[in-house]
Amino acid sequence: MPAPKELDPSASLAALYGTKLRKLRVRAGWTQRELGGKVPIAHSRIAQFELGNETPPEDIDRKLDALLGADCDLTDLWGHIKRTPFPDWVRKFVSYESNATAMHKYLAHSVPGLLQTESYARAMLEVGQVYSYGVAPDLEEKLTARMQRQTILDGATPPWLWVVLDEAVVHRLVGGRQVMRDQLEHVLAMTERPRITVQVLPYDRGEHPAMGGSVTLLTLSGGSQVVYLEGINSGTLVEAPGEVERYAVAYDLLQANALPPDVSADFIRKVMEDRYPCLPPDPT
Image 1: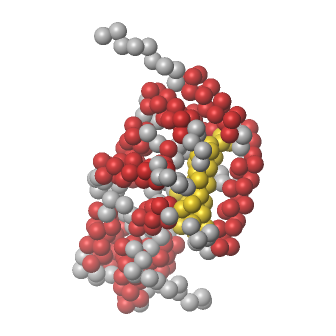
Image 2 (image 1 turned 135 degrees about the horizontal axis):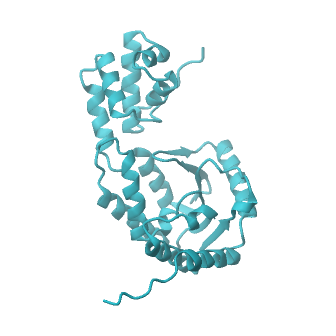
């Protein structure tokens, strides 16, 4: 049996929770499989909780606290995690992003946050509240933070931003037709800046290595690179050079298969005019 992975409780609140959970489980003399059976949930999820990769839903947290005799220590930690508007993985990614000299992004479902209008961003954040496990997030704070992040594109020497959008992004209606028209107009306007390039990856290019979700490759000021993988309500930072290299190659393939920038702009413009035409003026 391999030795258990070392935990760093200082890495995040989720990591602190996982460290506490492992100590309580070991003290109880149970394996991850045994604890999972008592909840009951798959033992692989217990492993993810302990590694800090996942935070349990509220009902699972309460069962763990009771089973392990934690005297509400786990539940108190869980509350701190859920009250934090920005998870640790988000803060770490934003820190990397603010120091990046180049960003290469593939988005499967939405316009990247750095190019979102406020109305589009609000619609995205509102629909994301379904994953809040009953804890009301501070939507306005998140919206303000997202808009503030965009200022990194306004400096004297902003980072290079290269975006590959899946065709679904320009077709998917978010926030209503006027919101979508304004959003696509904004994307086109941003591509007029010398350091911003947007390409569209059409449906007919078939399968590709990033079909599982969205990918961001950041090049930092020292030349090193990190990768950020974004899920429905979680994110993963990949920092090991070998792993990063594999994602960089995958991104190169996406760029090669996407439409050229000028053709992509025409594609976005056509979808905008066909699906989200200008609304007639209100007669009142």
